[in-house]
Image (cartoon, rainbow, N blue to C red; front, top):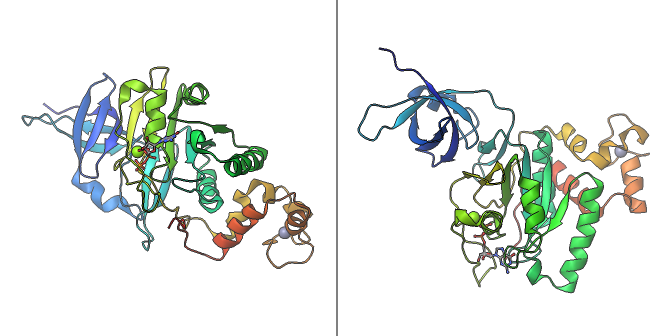
Length: 315
Ligand SMILES: Nc1nc2c(ncn2[C@@H]2O[C@H](COP(=O)(O)OP(=O)(O)OP(=O)(O)O)[C@@H](O)[C@H]2O)c(=O)[nH]1
Ligand SMILES: [Mg+2]
Ligand SMILES: [Zn+2]
């Protein structure tokens, strides 16, 4: 008798094994059918958390299954596999929104990092909510920086929220942002991604790590992406901390299109294909001079256009 494929959702992936939640609500450990390995193309992982798949239930003692079909993705988000590699690693698939966790210190998150993340999400049509976490540690300077960034990013369409996983500040709002949606949470190691998920959903008890005294960075406590169901409805995917975002799959001439405030001015530039770098009569550069466009956004743009590798200057 032929074995019938079962459908499921990949909720955890270790690279070798996938934990698949079936439509019946039970979890099955699956490996990948051999033919998938060659289809990786430029991605180091053919299947990611959030993928809808079909598997053949196994008949070995453990009942491990084999993934045989991956269903078409609505979207996905990638990071660069390694610093010098041109291949990418899919962080999560089929997501409704990304939640970017930013901290002004311990560890520091720069606007360069934020902007690279936004472009990559924008390119895949994924809305991004920006969370400024660790508010209990903010100095007056930090408060000013966060206020400026909130104005800047709200203006270009991102909801912004200040939270503290430690004191619970902003957590009710974060819970309603996540309700009934499939969200993935991203940010540097130590920014408090797992701690925030625990604050929203205390029953989960995800492991969190401390910040190193020496360089104020996290210690990569979360090592694999994992999707957790929320009791209010929806899922949140916790991901390992990332240092940098590869946006190498995006063509240079497309980059400005992913800066919405630049794109909105393009029709006022003298040249229809203005790169906003050296052309006369550039509306973006004029807006930069009047302060309508933020210097930090323009700096991020130039850095990306120059093909600069990005890494946070932590230490
Ligand atoms: N003071 C303070 N500490 C926090 C807050 N949120 C998280 N932390 C602490 O920051 C440290 C790192 O938190 P994690 O949740 O492990 O960070 P993460 O972003 O999941 O890090 P990785 O899993 O390594 O990517 C832990 O010691 C947390 O207790 C906060 O709002 N305020
Ligand atoms: Mg974590
Ligand atoms: Zn221009």
